[in-house]
Length: 116
Image (cartoon, rainbow, N blue to C red; front, side, top):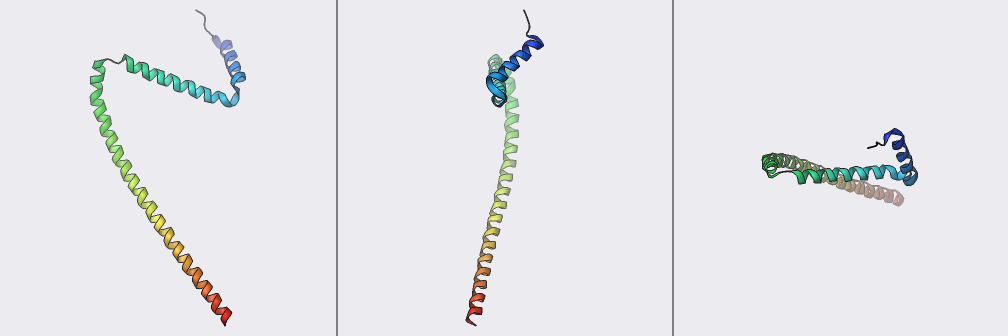
């Protein structure tokens, strides 16, 4: 069997660059990488035996417990963010009311000056 070697690899890369262009080449590389990753995961799933699946059950339960802890933490973080957003909105509403009152007072003062 023959191998590609460095000159052959360089030739393939130059051809790919010419055919696809410098903008599409990274996207093409990512697509190939994702495809290989999916293929690898699919073949790994097919080669798994029933014994391995039974051994994986306790691991799955541990993973679910970790997910539950992460989910609780996410829920706490979400509640905290929602509270902060509500406080910010309330603060902005109060600031808007204050600005409106100040504007009304300014207009009243101007009207009083014009009358005098």
